[in-house]
Image 1: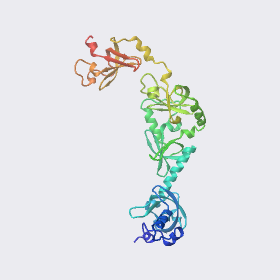
Image 2: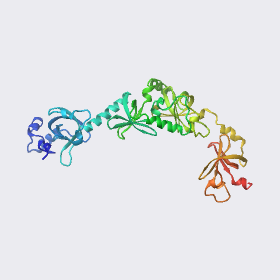
Image 3: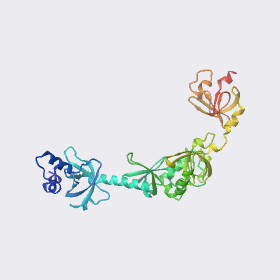
Image 4: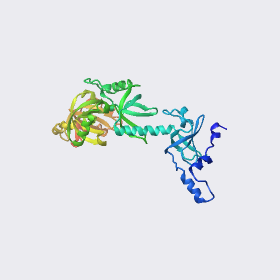
Length: 396
């Protein structure tokens, strides 16, 4: 028999001496028995309660928490990062987590380890409420940012947009094409094992989700300005800001502490394929507020809506049925895109490429090819042109 089993068998009731000090003697009357049962704590899984160590054996603690039987802490549940388990003595008070109020063998199973996990989340929730600055160590890198360890086994994520831009971008230096992604990835990799000062901007214990921000530490002085600005701005307002980050999907702009994203689709009326050719970190930019979400944590800006849409003016000179010159910009499985003027693109649907059955548009046209096309329809609201190649060849 194991040593701890000799100390107390799982599920056994408290000793007579212990019981006598806490509850009246059990008699034959049901009413008195019920009173005795009710005098014990009604425990449930997840409770954190204070108890007293009443026995200690190698690898096992026996704890009195006021339940119907003593509780056992053993195995991995006895591990602790902050408590000197070896130094615990009989008679010491101890805070424990209830794993099972009554297991299959009738024992009360307790944990020191899980008490710490709950305590850590409690501390994280407090830090999030108070805006405390925490130390986080970078342990992993991915395309969207870095994963950091706050406590052993407790990790959070810093999106690239929430890192200090100075870590990622060289001010005044433009990045072209794939360089935006590759440069960011190289800079992020260099952060491995580095300790970063952060604040918690999102916390979800149920999903074990922790989102962190270095920017809120670096630009902490902007927070008061941000709160002030949030109270008075609304959708449609125009603000002055600076570019703080460049990504393949748009740019981040800070306007007096209020940072938001200008998505690729909101940068220009023309199609943007290379953000780095338009902006670099530190550029001054004027933006329109499109949307404010989550109390200002997610803000969408637009640059193009402050500029007249050239498409509307340019399209006025074209008419339905007119034959015009164009250049094939791209070929897709359902047709081909053709540019007929600066910023004016249209689609030749696969059914309008030839009078014959077309299975692969690349058999008919190739990128860069000059073509004559007929305008089938014009949609100003959707900025869309339908074009035809076969009707020109047929003379229709």
